[in-house]
Image (spheres, protein in one colour):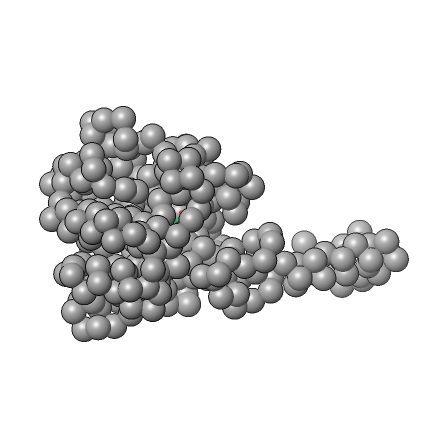
Length: 278
Ligand code: KIV
């Protein structure tokens, strides 16, 4: 029987991430939502692939992540897990799949593991700390997420920079320590000042994964569509675009349309005839 992390030494596990932090090596994370992009991201050597609930925004075109549910997230998790051979696959638990009761959180987290994820991500602290502790006790690895937590967008009053005031910074650090004590194997820090992320990263033994949290986190994560230039609108301040795939797709589709309209496609090489060999 093939067991991850044992007979396949190259595969990334939660222990690999802990080792990378100990060795002060940066952890590379990206989101993916489907088979072909997950395969390419995995082949490119990314350490952790997050099936993010940002699928709500970049795949479904929805305004907030509140609108995506368990069934959609399971569907994307299955597709990603089927493609990935090396990276650790983490599934984002969607809004209200873990907040109502820890019993429901356990049942839903279990569905993600059955779909092929190796860990789940939960946003926030407070009651989520106890849920995290129970999941970890049952053998389900949990990644935390603090700072800007998009499922709380209405409470936060928008997608603003978090932990600006000293008391908010103290709260964030205390929450981070509680999540670590509850057994999180890593912690996403989203849209917080670099100085705050640096302090939290130094205070924790588990790796921090930053997005809009400066260069001193133990790793970085971006939404794949932002990095590839597939998202609509100008890039956010914390995003670097490494490709312009929107332009490339528009060019390819326009060329195809022009070829069809001019009778240049299909060509002789794409065409079958009655005398074709079987
Ligand atoms: O849903 C997501 O893509 C995320 C990352 C931005 C961390 O939570």
